[in-house]
Length: 214
Image (cartoon, rainbow, N blue to C red; front, side, top):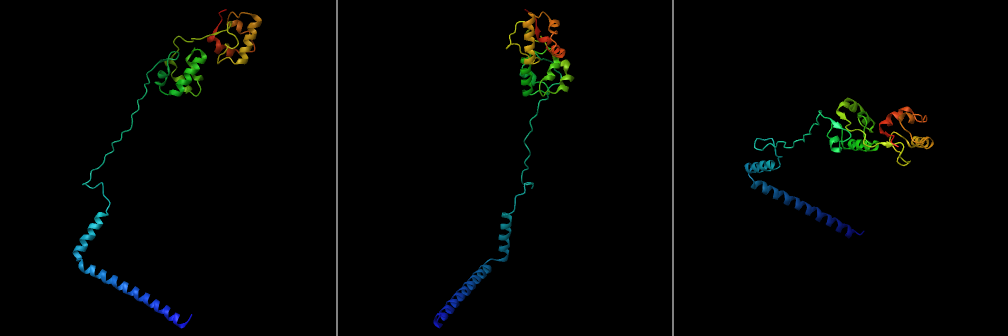
């Protein structure tokens, strides 16, 4: 760089510094003039007004209303403990009305009842999947069987696809049909007990559902 170029740079820097100084002096003078115009008392009033405008409202102040809780929790109707029910006639509505029985259990009870052909005894309710067996046994006297079994299994009439019952698995049903084929009409329960391949406990559960009409 030549000497003239260096002098030019110094000159420009000097002009910039001088301009910044003049600007700073101008701002100071302007602020001082504003300060001289505002009186101290008036300035304090303006400051207090600004503080009040930014203050958060207090809802517990006596000038503000207190909002009371208006939400009310729903009340649930307690199911009566004094009840009886005909377990062979009751529909789902009657079952759901009982304590401890919801729509799911009501549906299971009705499904199981239909598969059985009706309840022969109240104790059979304990066989419903998932039901509270303790509650059933505590309320056995309240369960009435009414007319009892409404659909029987015709031992001497039913063909292979009709010989179905929850208490008689398919393999054991085939044994009964084979026995009938070999011995003809089965006249009574005692004759049926001659089938040794089926345990007596199975016949005991199945007995209310058997019909020996020829």
